Image 1 (cartoon, rainbow, N blue to C red):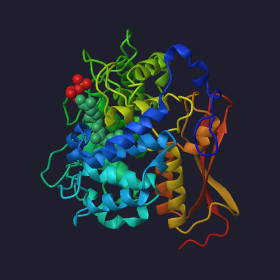
Image 2: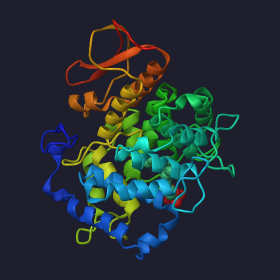
Image 3: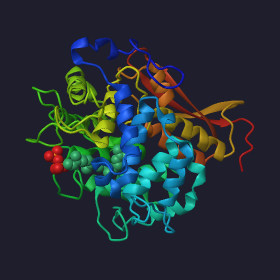
Image 4: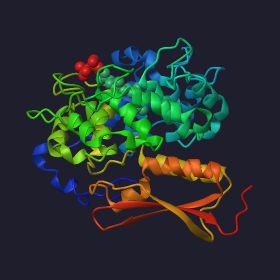
Amino acid sequence: MFSTDGSRVEGTSSLSQSISPSMGELASEKHVQFIVSVEKKKDSFQSVVMEHIRMNGAYWGLTALDLLGKLHAVDVEEVVSWVLQCQHDSGGFGGNIGHDPHVLYTLSGVQVLALFDKLDVLDIEKVANYVAGLQNEDGSFSGDMWGEIDTRFSYIAISCLSLLHRLDKINVEKAVNYILSCKNHDGGFGCIPGAESHAGQIFCCVGALAITGSLHHIDKDLLGWWLCERQDNKTGGLNGRPEKLPDVCYSWWALSSLIMIDRVHWINKDKLIKFILDCQDIENGGISDRPDDAVDVYHTYFGVAGLSLLEYPGLKAIDPAYALPVDVIVRHLRYSDIRFGMQMTGPHKVVGSRQIGPLHPSLQATRALKSMPVSAQFLLQQQIRQTSVAAVEIRSIGGMSLHCQLSICTRATSSLG
Ligand code: GRG
């Protein structure tokens, strides 16, 4: 269950009831201090090695702070001003001031602004044109003007354009077909057609299919089996592909994918929580890839994000497809409603409905209603653009085994042009 600010109330979710003292505890305050200190100590090893990917680092660190309920620990104006200084005339963002633009940093820039509800500082057409301009004839995406192709860039383009409400700028059908051409016989996805399945690429492909309402193309049992095999029986940690070591970051890449295809109950959640907590530096804060290794912001973020997916108490919920806190996504949808000049209240009639569940029982009713599944979000955006839809209702039906029903409503007295 969630409080009004989107954080979970201790002891009310099914999983939080099973958190036992032997698992250890999340050292939240220490992690906040660690993240803030990396940002402040510009000469530190961490800051220097992250110089060229500082935009990604900002997204990791700030999203972790938000999940921990401490986004206010940073100066908003300072962050927004720095993000804008990383933008190029092309509309794309660099990894730091003076660095070349790339979609990797463009999505992070957009995500950081979305966290602070500051997307309105952007020339949205310009950013969207930069991203959309990187789509190739076969539906794939290049990362920048130099042309490397990777399903990471397909995800980034789709997520970014969806956040900017500009998915109509690309050929979504071709983008989806390209992603499907990267699907392997083991159910997983690689970075290009024929490339080995990897949990990181699987997140990208499943996330992109979720945002575009195309998850029905996935053999969920086959992929779910491959993904749950990533759990190491001894440590409880997940790896990214067979015969590799477990790493905290796969508590995001693999787990979010399992949630999106509704197979998260195929792994042992308690063991995974313990693995993530074992990777903390209890004294100085931060989370590492494996127990007793050096901590960094990347693993700190994906450790906290993984715990959020696992419904660890006290953390905000995170959206498995957009990799942003659920309240940011919900706020953003409201923003889109305002942009299209509509009100969510007033007389309306139901004109159609589509089954979009089932949702996994671990998702509480409040979560289902608050978070609105990504496929529904996409449908909503499309409908808003194409028709005179004025409201969307999501109803949970069927008690504990939640099914979510999306009803498209039009205003009885529509004033939409
Ligand atoms: C908004 C969350 C978010 C992502 C944006 C950049 C991106 C889209 C996704 C990256 C997905 C990816 C490929 C993740 C894997 C990163 C990683 C740990 C790679 C390491 O690969 P190896 O081969 O490690 O060095 P393994 O674990 O296979 O030994």
